[in-house]
Length: 188
Image 1 (tube, rainbow, N blue to C red):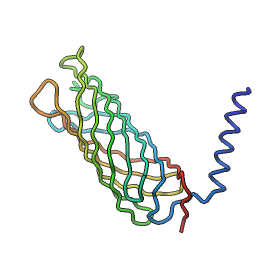
Image 2 (spheres, one colour; image 1 turned 120 degrees about the horizontal axis):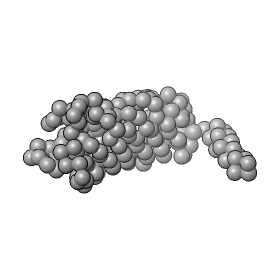
Image 3 (cartoon, one colour; image 1 turned 120 degrees about the vertical axis):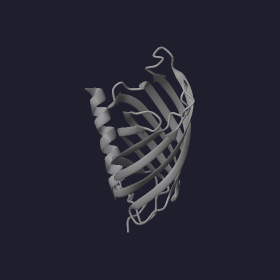
């Protein structure tokens, strides 16, 4: 019971402090914003037939109104195509995004590098570590200082460990994201 009271007090303190301060997004002001989300990412393999489903999410920090550093993590869940090529995959990527803010809209492009732990049904006992390269494009719409909607497309290139062809994928997703301004941002 004591731990529950402490957690409740911390949550109330954080909520009150964020409501009292003027931390609301203004037109184009993004510096100091932290974003995070988790969603389902359908993925189309380009060099083999297969529609994969990933659970993924990212954390994003705006260090400038037009630039951010972002880290993504994806976990393979299942495939809509049977038999599936992928047995298991975990991918972690990080990189920079460039935004083109227009009022509450943030179209963006970005590049990321990362690593992938890939296991296929062709060799189910072998897990391979791959390097990855991703190009992203998307759109954020800032609804409120704590919420935003997003749509994004991602092209990921990585080597296929068992074939000469690359294991390239297009991923797309959208949804609701959460954000916290860590500096005062006013709304106009």
